[in-house]
Image 1 (cartoon, rainbow, N blue to C red):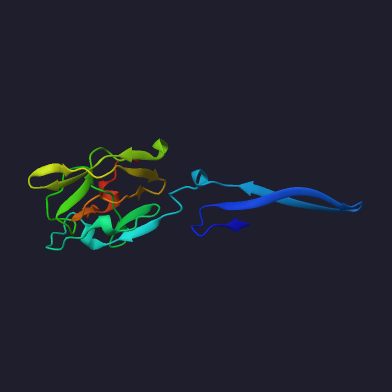
Image 2: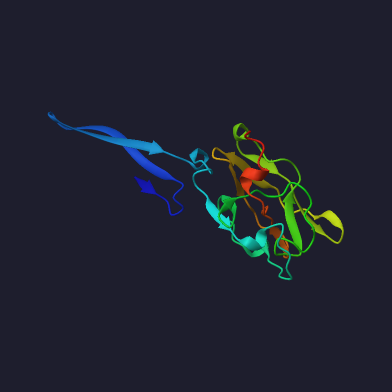
Length: 172
């Protein structure tokens, strides 16, 4: 098996060869693309308490400077949480303009969906509108997110500060 450095692609080979009248060799080839991997299995955990909606601070964390690569599962002190689905007050989530998604999270059967992101600043809940993100609901009551650069600084993706089990009604 050959894998690329990201671990998301692999290549195997299946070939039947007759090397000699009585000697046979079988090789197997499989081709996988990134479309075949499940982000619910291949993700990075993001457990940064400063991202919590109850975290107000004077710091201005900037998700535009993060090299987002792949999928992320949000945690708060080791517990599953999700991005907020409503406006978060400015100067929360460890940044000036906290980012939240404008519509409900998907259900498990929905697969990967696109969600609009907004950033609250200067009394406008959607003053900043960075590129949309991808979201997937996973069996086991958690979400994974494919974050992107926000376009400007002082914007950061928020993580709810409550327990995922307390806030998650979609699987009930």
